Image (cartoon, rainbow, N blue to C red; front, side, top):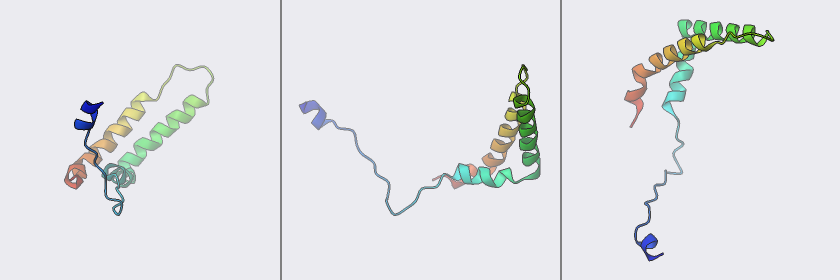
Length: 85
């Protein structure tokens, strides 16, 4: 037990006064409002509704989901790293 008290892990605490906000979440909200990204999201939702409306189907909406997420991340990447500390 003496070893543990000698070599304890450092504890890092955030300031209580400052509310931390994830810049990626904020940028994603902004990018979702852009026309081409919103249309990809609508296309994904239409596919989801179509798949959920059928009882026996092998169709998935992975392509639509990947298209939407890739475009959203591409939009966010333009300004995300300038906002990180």
